Image (tube, rainbow, N blue to C red; front, side, top):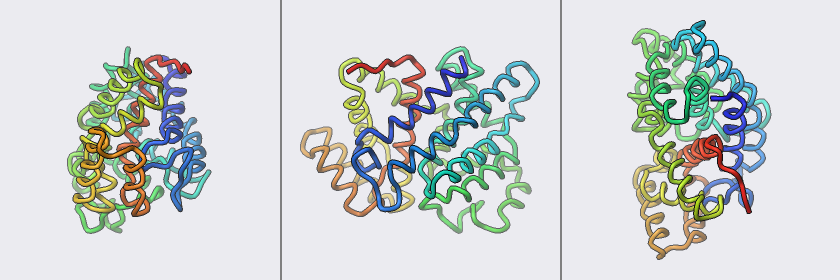
Amino acid sequence: MERWKIIKAFTLGPLLEVMIPKPGNVNRFKDFEDLTLYHFLFGNVAVVDILYEATEVSRLIKRGDYQLSEANIGEMIKRAVQNAKATQDANPNFGIIALEIPLVIALTISKNLYDARELVKRLIEHSTVRDAMEFYKAIRIANPKGIKSGVKYDVYDENVFDELFRDRINLKRLAEISCERELIFCEWLNGYELSYKTFLRLKELTKKFSLEEAVLNAFIELLASTPDTLIIRKAGKTEAELVMRKARETLDGTFSIDELDKFLREKGDLRNPGSLADITAIALSLLILDGYKFNL
């Protein structure tokens, strides 16, 4: 697929995601105390050069100059996070970066949107121990909320890089270990199943509704059907299940979108569905890449 179409789509998608007033997330009307719309605008635009680099790596793989194992996914994720961090003082887009870099590589090599799903799984499978180490450095730079300590391959443990090397842990192995704790890793393993499912739902909804209405509908459906792993990490499974129940009530019409938004914000950002927002950003990028044209 054409590189600049991909780069533009994966720049616009995350910007659209943060602008649309989805319940519980930062948007153009509401911020959190330590995370605002401007953090997202600065952070997402700051990674454009790394997206371009990802398409260049794809060209080298396609030409046969690089093997899949030489894609340097981990390092690119790390440098994208560094770029974002250099422009603002929060962590608005670590999840998006971790999802978009491998997918952009796969899409640029692939003939169409759908072929990329199998290729991105192969990229993760052929990643190296160095990729995992660089990815861990990216996590340390971004410093996401809710990272548990005391787990196997603890990100902040001083011996973790020796452990990753000793056990030959690459991105696939890391994802297999961590999928239960973070949706990103599940997407790496299953070929971005939830991202593509959400994209196809958006494609269907935008035939009937405005872009904003379509995104709101799709996002609430996600909240109702999928536990948000950021909420689980920060507030626990019980809170995540409660969020799902309230989202289902919203779909049923017994709880309004405004009530859902108020509920999600009543404990600050503990119920902020950030992992599902990342999925939505990728889905929107795919929608743009698929040729969606904005109309009033």
